[in-house]
Image (cartoon, rainbow, N blue to C red; front, side, top):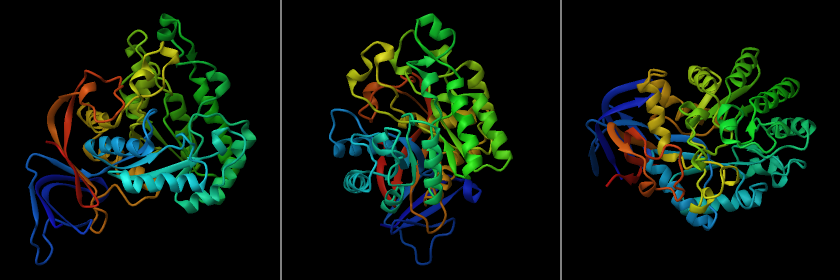
Length: 425
């Protein structure tokens, strides 16, 4: 279908576009911005006056599973939630059931995504078999099957030799190792940041050193192996400083941060509210300030949702026994826009961190409005205010630390490969 979007404020950081103009789509591709193609006759015209048009968001960390659902239903429901939030490309983590640790399992997930997904789904495969931390997965076969990286997510490795061998194998295959820095011995049974909030609630805390010690070991091995490592979901300002120094010395490192880590700290946790049970945990106010100050640093290639949907009863146990994570697709864009409103980033910088920068880190064709690229884009109203409520969340997971909060910025239309996959009714 030939589609024209008129009078939109087009913001495309990769191509330095920031103006009100028209954009033309056909045959799954973006044809042009500004002047229509020769002989153009639209089959559908959208007046986007008052709306921003940006590349579809690229979310580099999401879980699509939800216990009690079939995989097909889970992929359908969660990718629908994603496109309603303007996300057109997302990366699925390997810690599903079963674990994505073989080419066969990866291809199985890809087949389900092809038939059930509303957006583009990419896969980070398991670093070790079954995520058990000892035997390396067949990375060569996984790369050939189409994975965009490897990770052991939050599952510990048996020892640092496994990490070294993993770096060497991944580097030999040209794969990025996505590393979530957490020393399991220092983490122990912690469920919240080690600090006054943990003391007040009588919960076991996780010290900052659990993250920084793991970062230090990983950096030493990167220097030794030359591997490309992406540090996922940073939570401490000290870890950021360590990576800044490593980057300045030429190590091939990058990082991302979950959007909630830029707005919440452990002081914000209501007593024993399991919606705030996250990993890494919400850190101190000083860490929060440090992350916010550093968000425009070159080491950061993405702000992500870290979306983890759960069934209703997953958050009904005592705090430490509840499932970790929150449903976060629908807050990714408005929280990113809030950084602009608060003066931490300009709009181009903010949109870059959820579009072309994560796409470049993953080496996928996404995140821009370049002519000839896939017509993945999002139209949103920057002024519309709304409240996050469990009964209106499109994800099957209804848990978020932002429930009841007001947000500004509402997605109106989402296109994937030139097809209108979401339109607010």
